[in-house]
Image 1: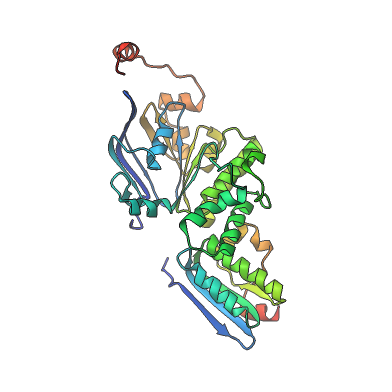
Image 2: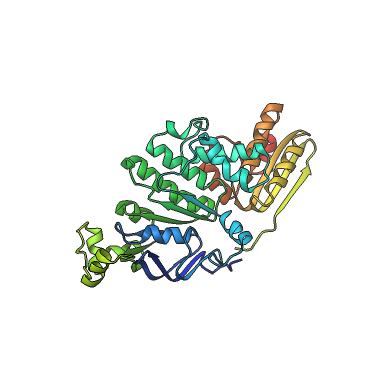
Length: 267
Length: 112
């Protein structure tokens, strides 16, 4: 169990590789209880890879990932399950089970992980649909939902168990500005009312600036900085300013590594 | 903040059952709150006093919702009394503050 002051997420010197490409260059990353942390970065910055490690979907090549005080690469199945029960994830594409109704998708974690009475499960899952403004849609199938509704249904499922820690991958991607702003508002209210600690991965600047207590900026596998919204806005790092001002990056070419990638038989 | 012990005690105020709930109501024991509320509703009208609730999750809210719905089915009154800020925040998140009957104190609830 973590002490009150220990970070809920504590990543040290995390390295990640895909084949011969190093994606994360030994990053340190910590998130405290009650915080909304936004991980920002362009395509290929390593933010999705960091998220997958935080969720335990990949084991670190080196470094450690501790969630709720548990080193997830070395935890027993039982410890991992206990951690997973306290975590909610809203995936970018929703990841709803297409053969289940919206209501059953949201109720699924409660049915899998608790012994609660079915009446309680029904109320809890419908309550979550109300929270995300999908009240009354429990009998629809995922295929009948619009993009924004899928996103909200996925969020309802992610918070079904009232998780301590909520991960939200690209909440605004593909949404119209009004729905996107509503989701931002909801993230803030979830933190305040249900005391969630929330990690949001996004490349949407407006959303990041609205919801974040602090922002971690990733670029080509390195954390350029972690700071408040103001600190990030006003920092004089050229790459961060490029990201904020949407300037295309100059891709660095390592001639040796490039030629090896093109020519070696066993890549 | 000082930790408040998890408690759920029912008092009989002469035909009116007052369920006093305190502490952090979460999945680990919210079913006890549910059972206490449903048991109290076997008597008469019920008030749930929530001033010492430091946290309530949706399983705790579900217990209140089920109590309210059961009371309506039986033609009984069901009120939330002195809901603490954390309780109000969760009720507002789900717009349930507009659904429940809320009172500031027990006297008002009994008179209500």
